[in-house]
Length: 82
Image (cartoon, rainbow, N blue to C red):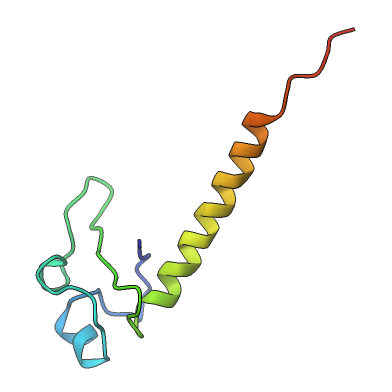
């Protein structure tokens, strides 16, 4: 699952997140620093995490919906010419 950082939600695996009940991997998330990428850090989120999972699942659902729209558009046969 992916997670989009919220202003008030501590990063997965951080001490603040753990204190709030986070069950996401600590070492995989570098103690809340995340995995470095050019567009910013990325995080591993546990599916059952009470702090992060709901937001991550919403993002997965959004991306699945977009992918379904793209697949439907790609599967549509071209219209016949005049």
